[in-house]
Image 1 (cartoon, helix red, strand yellow):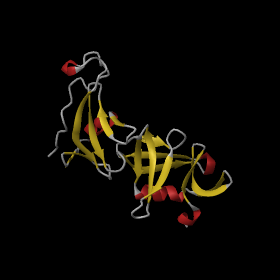
Image 2 (cartoon, one colour):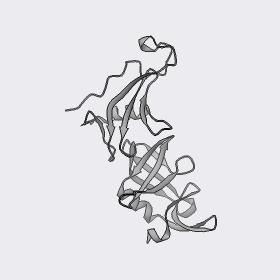
Image 3 (cartoon, helix red, strand yellow):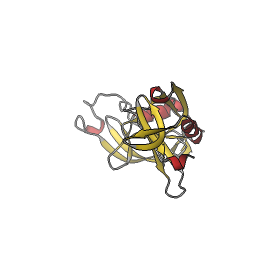
Image 4 (cartoon, helix red, strand yellow):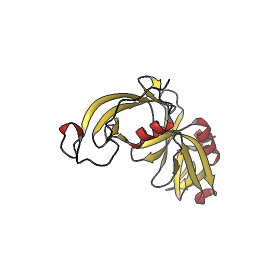
Amino acid sequence: MDTTPPSLPANAMSANTAAAPGGLAPGMIESCGDFGIRIARDGTWYYQNSPIRRLPLVKLFASVLRREADGDYWLVTPAERGRIEVEDAPFVAVELEAEGQGRDQSLTFRTNLDDKVAAGESHPLRVTTDPATGEPRPYVLVSPGLEALLLRPVFYHLIERGQEATIDGTSQFGVWSNGKFFPLGSLTDAT
């Protein structure tokens, strides 16, 4: 059974803010509090703990997803906004396509929503370490403030493409994509 997420006004997905519902002045957005939507660590979207199984609906919600400076995630339409919970990152990278070699290679990630993102200046890769387990947590920036967590097999594929490079006089292990070098960890971590 598919659970229908909270109702949004019929005109909420349009860019027209001249006639905001509820008597709001143009350009004002009504805060609806918590929408009861959660994005699990594996990229599954839930509404009141039931998975949202319709991919077009998830893509629609993802198109209005924003992250604020305080780290909170919101679904924002021209008329209203509501907070949602994100356990780790709002997206997951499920596949890696690599073209070329070394400094000339391009790495493109496909997300769980079938978006493609080429790592580079505008879409950097970063790797953090989980303080509890010591395991790496790799991410690629999909859009401003919104990242995709690389699934373990995708990260292993990325590591296979890694190489040693001297950056600013320091030997590092990482990958090149679209002319930019992204460190993946220290050389002692990579061996």
